Image 1 (cartoon, rainbow, N blue to C red):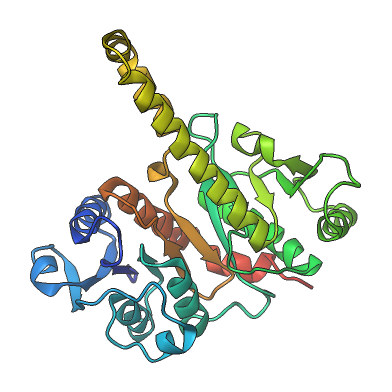
Image 2 (image 1 turned 180 degrees about the vertical axis):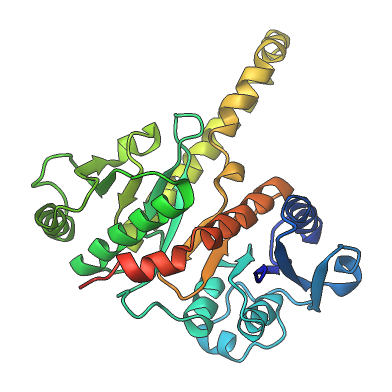
Length: 326
């Protein structure tokens, strides 16, 4: 039986190659069944055991235009996608820029024939420990049509079943739970999904309910989804700042912090992106995982785990079979 092949772009993260190195090392230790192609600084990566190293010393330009990326041959991301195709690998993982990753993926991997448009999907934090809610699209598309949102719902359903092993509930992000609420796009999509009797579809959900963990999949257009995700991330950072500021105010507060430190750390972890495993560009012919730009070793390992579970669960094949827009 052939080994699973995963290509890893080791550059481009905010914390440098030290974080991706440690994350990959931890992943390798628990997954001897995977063949790894690591793209990055060779004199650093050569110390990794059982890894094929492709030397690259340049990060992809964060502000590069599509035409620049088309001619990019030297960045670690460009070489990673070249390796993905050359070695016929199953998946690629990178914490480089989202725009560059989506551009490379669109050009080098291409979408599945039965998918209208790929989408960027990611778990978001919830109040229920261990519960993951998927939100999509997160910005792969700025504008979407009804049939595309329907396709997103179908793809996300297949994703959830393949990666998490359960039948999900599905909702549309709207400004009210009533059937007639939302933009014309959301109203029409609601009508189509209801008439199609898509298994798991429960109607609309308001943004105030996103983090409660009562819904497994929340579908929206890319523009709205990207704003929602950034609002969630910003709110989490504000909460952490306010708590840190409060506990530094006085000796009494510092003593109080010592009493609640353990429980507080556990609760704040629920707002962290580290356990979530990054985002995935679904609807493509290979698994493409976008690790968070600020990934530490734990977060990067979890992004690799997402790629592993997706390949193991034959996500691409299942989306190809079960997420047709027709």
